[in-house]
Length: 187
Ligand SMILES: C[S@@+](CC[C@H](N)C(=O)[O-])C[C@H]1O[C@@H](n2cnc3c(N)ncnc32)[C@H](O)[C@@H]1O
Image 1: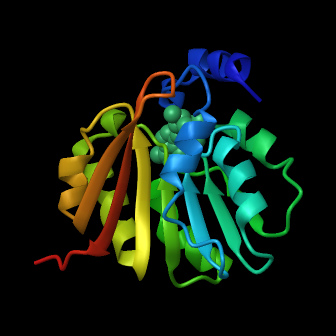
Image 2 (image 1 turned 120 degrees about the horizontal axis):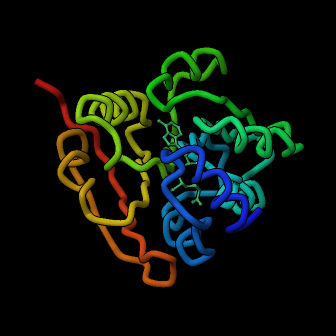
Image 3 (image 1 turned 135 degrees about the vertical axis):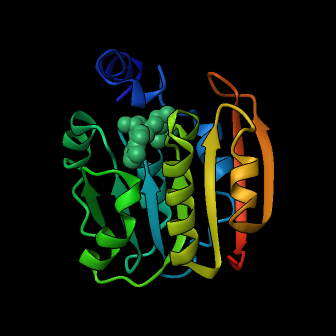
């Protein structure tokens, strides 16, 4: 599922925020910290047509889970075509992560992987998604994100002790990859 699907969907839905799926270089760099040798729970925010999902499912153990939360209905229809019992797809906003995890019978997440366009979101919604995600993250886990600029560093630092960024130039447009871990205590 490629550029044509993205362009068609972007015309109707600005939240799609991209003209083409992430490159394989972005997919590999953004997921390089994931320990695929054990059973893990990954929550993917904004999977689009599933470019990361395909890669993740090849690497994940049989006992792992991939929960995909995608706002766009047309993309969800495509994701529903993935035949894999480790996968759940929700046509919802990332803000509803608590209810979704409860529905899955899961208490915490090992890795969040997020491609949602945070720069489009009102400050409060951005903060809600980050704080809810931080509260559900396993202490050894990571919040991983990819965005077209470094704008997410400051908001991430409000919720995580460590935030690393690195650009992947082999992407259209170049992508900033974030690795955040260590939940901060909120006062
Ligand atoms: C830039 S695209 C990334 C798609 C894909 N992961 C990739 O790497 O090519 C952003 C995706 O986030 C979805 N999205 C935007 N806001 C969202 C939200 N609040 N909750 C869940 N998904 C959202 C969009 O519909 C779109 O599929």
